[in-house]
Length: 111
Image 1: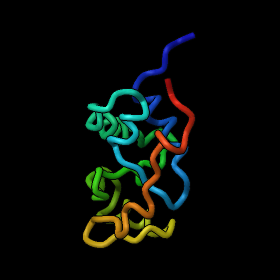
Image 2: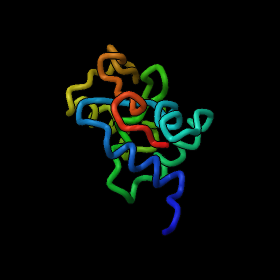
Image 3: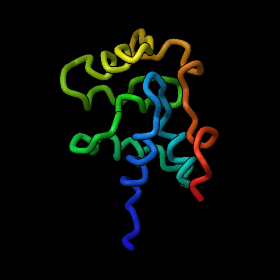
């Protein structure tokens, strides 16, 4: 059986983020056993446009919409989050911890 790529593993985790919740690049990396690979998770999100991945639900560690310039239009990432009930002001999720979903706590151990 073929080993999944890191990007494919990232996409699998991202697809599990519940509607109306968000996680961080670093939280996904940590869950996959690659805690220092948050930037790689960001690259995966940037390359996810052809896949069914809710990339708008992945933000930086303090809730900033750092990947928003990779979405079509100027405010699409924010609009998608707001459509799910997540409040965003000045490119930052309001009450970030309220919406934060930690795959290491919510999913069975990856390894």
